[in-house]
Length: 390
Image (tube, rainbow, N blue to C red; front, side, top):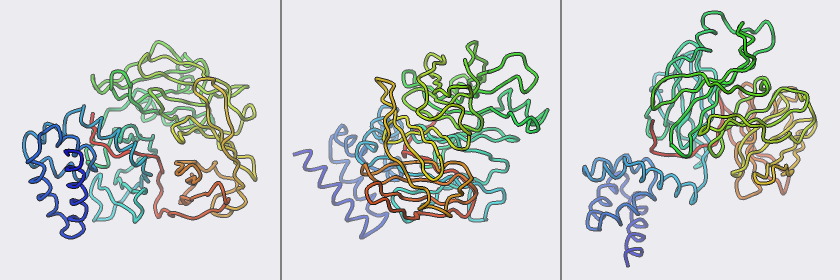
């Protein structure tokens, strides 16, 4: 009876919202208050973040419930199971329009594609998302972690690498720039950690590779004793998956390198499925369909592989004919990034050059469709809405 009751309430809430807009929130909260609180929790954790933010004003007990880590974890897990991830396009504004507030969230007409606008000068890169949080790297201003759904944000200070870059300037003249930032959560302790991995010899330091970890629980950076066994491939964004960060190595036989955020140790996972010593702009690591994946562009095709986590072997997922995307994607530019796969046969690809589009590729019919063309530089990432903060 309770399951039927709260199911009908949610159904009625949907129709109320279409008829009366925001007034439906008040009517739903009144109806929910007639139920036991454990049933209220079961209903609330199935609601989107926007509704939960409004329902925090109902009572102190609801605030306590919605703000609890246990509730937030359950809400995020249910969203993953019921809907899957969204796509988030992060747009950078050096001189933002007047109607774009700091960390304001805008939405496109699609239910899976959202845009968040950041009016920060010198924002260079977005380093992916973890449990609804997004990490940004800035050169001359502190780094920042943002929850686009709740508009919560928190900055964290410069690393020693950033201070070296500010003092000395990046070593662009050498052509050997290899530092990268990763961001993820230790799945055992729940602690979020940005991680710098860089070739410190380029800055006149002794060791070849150095790793710095920022721990939000102590709000401080620290150097790790363990260093990477290999330098990382130039201009490769790391990816976060299942408690670890992953990079491609820059060596004769390119390998997949992991950094476990719990043990804070490096490990070589396996060799890559493509040729040795590839051009950095022609290969990429990413997460697709809850698997660590790799892709290589060898014109006119782009091949995508997924890694079997148990056997550490690669399986080819698909091969894309890039001639069908020309001239929407730059033939000589960086490899298009696969950002999501839906219904097992609809692949989203985002161009990584200036203002390249987000495209939908049907793996069965081999057709392409332009989903969105950005009007400002930015990055497209997969993303889950959550209530989390750090």
